[in-house]
Image (cartoon, rainbow, N blue to C red; front, top):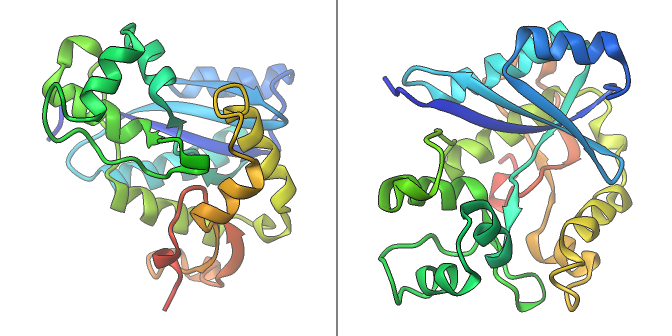
Length: 228
């Protein structure tokens, strides 16, 4: 059993950050925050867990939807570059670059993707490494593994009603907002194409009424997540 809380970041719909009733329900029942980023609402949760992180994450999604009356539509992988890692750890970009290139420290995570030739990582991978190798640099929280993230993203996509109607332009705009200030050579279209976000996904652990796979955007899910 882990003594750490699981940090989970979710993209949601049907949630108004100016609605006192919804916001009040979120804060009353969960250790969570909500923020609107370029038209998308992200809820960040801290969840007390045992040994089954994925099971706890699925239960949190169900409880969140039922209690706050919103829809969870995607998993936010919280992608970061060298500058963002430096800001979150209060270290210099040079110090983080030395870690990333293996000049200081060992086994730093491989980049998740290279949009426009720029390295980006999931914060979960970086923070998990820091917890083991530089614990004084970060707060002690647990994260889903990459495989668990893939499974949760597929499970969310299967059960999220109406997710298939979301258009690529929405996600391109969100990515553009996240990276334009730092990665001026990487267009959002390149990012979407490079990471292969659009796949048919299915999860046999979903509730029987929610089995039908949908064509959906799964944030960060590689093409291997497609249902066979």
